[in-house]
Image (cartoon, rainbow over all chains, first blue to last red; front, side, top):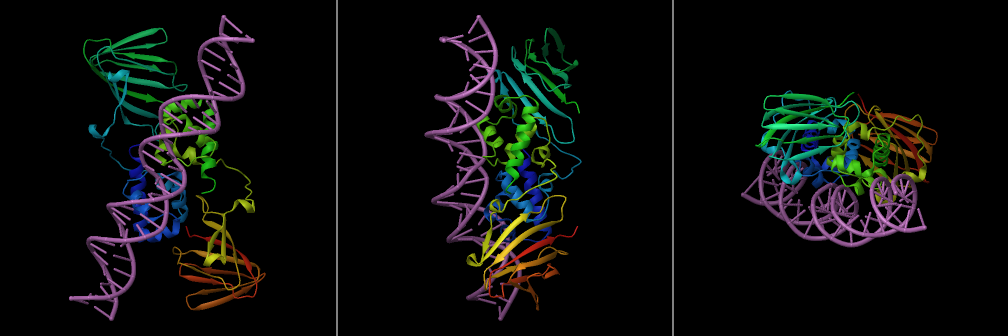
Length: 184
Length: 184
DNA sequence: TTAGATTGTGCGTTATAACGCACGTAATGT
DNA sequence: ACATTACGTGCGTTATAACGCACAATCTAA
């Protein structure tokens, strides 16, 4: 969600400049105002799919070529650019580091829970597995009736296609990474 | 542009019902209000790409699977569902019948020009060709300095990578089809 | 039957996409 | 030097996406 606008921005700008077209020309070809096109190129706007469709048609290119991420070998995600989701009245902070994207069947989170924090998760889609490594503090996971406690340095893998609960059972704030893998 | 909303609508509804999810559940998974989700499913809204991105992520599916047209063998385009583009103060009406779509390298229009109507077109991208068949009246096309007049039943093919002008040189309203082919 | 929960839709409000217009800058021409 | 054109951005307005709330219909429970 963070990138999609900038991806479109880059693609549109690149495609336009490759063809040496002005914003006016593209506006004429697509039926989208050049003001809007400019804002899209600068990543200042999150256009509707109808607008993107018109642009693709006007430029005679596919929809996907506009939203497809130019294959990069390396991506850096600075900590301060990740906006946390908070749960349990701020006691639990979830950082989505590498969200699910086409091609990959997993996503990676980093989580932080204050002492006593709780987080309950619905059952994921069938066959889904989670891989957790604890870097700080202590974490207790309850899956159905079973309960597992993992501490600093420990890891755990479990099938996440049933409801499960995370709980900071230690005395300090904990921190751990989570990889969620979705079956093909 | 006409369909994109309904394509997304169908895909979303299908994917949701396949998994037996309620709008509330999907709202929870995606962070999009169920009101909006409902409107999208009914084709009443043209969501922003950021919204579509969130839906794709929440449901763990690719962006393209949401906007990809379910392969249909047959498509009917009723005349009254084609909204005309008008030029030359209403003297020229352009009906986009089969717009450019990924996979195909051409698009098909139907045009109608009242007596005396003019329509000038910019140069298309290099290698582009137009195929025109006149079904009613008379049509004169000027490409650079050359001029060609085609009448009912006649056809013409020309390279459209330079500016060209269409003109109804006859005494009655004319009508013709136009196929524009873009080089690979 | 009645009470409770769950589902999808309608309504009013707010946020923002999208537009037309006009301005500042840069490039071009004479 | 000046005028002219072309290009991209800022501003104010309008259209509409997106939200929260609440209602009507359907299903469950007892």
